[in-house]
Image (cartoon, rainbow, N blue to C red):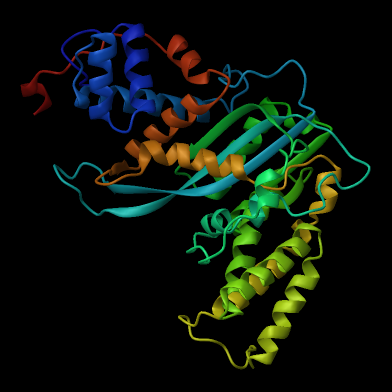
Length: 394
């Protein structure tokens, strides 16, 4: 393996892998190991050991398709009351392997990410929160969610600041995570297998949340048909916000328009939202026969109409709330940020595919609530890893 000219104890390997999984770089992992544990290990050695363990995790994941292989995902004693599956794409920058020093054929690649959540569950006879939540009535927060500049001169109202906590939402109990460079078909199989091991298909309440990416819903249709498909409300909100701002030159009027449309969407009146936006487009003389230029700011309105129309069947938010199901994929968004913290950054390139896949496996395993990384390190085949002589390597 070419790790170093000495043996590594299982404890030191565990320290190395966890340091590599939880810090921003192998260089920072080396500092932590030295200053906290008194272990002098070079960044290159940390990188090599981490890649070995990450590739072991990938091979073990694929080998566990055979039922004879013990799974790292321990099956719980009872199924969850509410099983929630969420998926989303991420970005990682890669380079061609075995091309010598430097970066060769750099490119951005999409990662596939999923979190499988065991959550609390409570149903309601009526919609427990028919009013638009305070976070979606805060100009600064909404602008951040939509990744737009905030509307000037607008501040949160006192009513928003005094609003009580919203305790009706399902709460996370146990999270397991998946991340990979594979295509959506293979990733869907990985997600289904993880869900079966977690006994998700036995849960009395099941939900699958995603944004508008087509591969999310292809996975849901192929592997999670028994789960209620739900479009993440915050993604719908971002389209509505952009469209509302585009329909008015006056900032206050645009914000008022946004509140009206967002409230209607939250209350399940999606057809009213698309109809209102379509009326505005008609008045502007915009239709299929008169398309807009790509840089026209009014494209935000046509984009919103198309997005809401395509996802209409996954936007019955009052029903989902009555059934005690989540309506946002905030936990998935958080997980993608946690993954990106380790794999995405300035001057951060990963060998494609083995280095990228290895670090994703290690990071995802470290973020799981079921200690699967620790269990892999405790059960992996033990052997001495000795650097090959330079002459032999040459």
